[in-house]
Image (cartoon, rainbow, N blue to C red; front, side):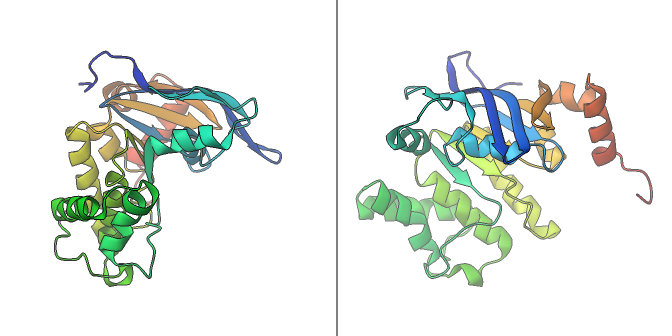
Length: 260
């Protein structure tokens, strides 16, 4: 059941195109996200999922397409985009990457407060108090003075999530947040993301964890070859996919043959 309230979209992207040399990675991708909604992108490796995600906050500059966040400027990438417009787009969201990207010489607390304190210019006392509360919320209370190398991969990724939350974004973007983790650590990170979804955070998630997508998503997009092959509620995509390509992908991932 959707968490949306029928209001105008928080984020819209239309006609996203992107090539790297002769490789056309995106060939006209559309995406809409309402406030409080979780949109999950699935598909085989190389299908364009991460490029879509990075295009939504200006980390990647599409060759063409329009991206707009509620209350902000509409950005048409077919034309010259002033840096301030891309920065304004980026300010509305926060990205959680595959490989944590924590500063190794910073403590956990320093990693979390760097953005809201030094970049956003918020009062340090306020930022520190909020960071401690967020770390406690994800089970990392008492690890504020640890360095990243002293944490497990799952703990480091939870710090990455807290670092994103500390920026107070309108939109959370997750790029394969569990792909670099040992299998036994995946669940602890997915649980945090699921709790954020249940609390009403707006998010776009790229993942290969299809059981998570089926449980947490309001809307699922299946990408292949740089296009959206099929989209819809998780019950439809996972329970009764219409497109033969979607059916083959899900059969291979969800019901692999014995010995395959």
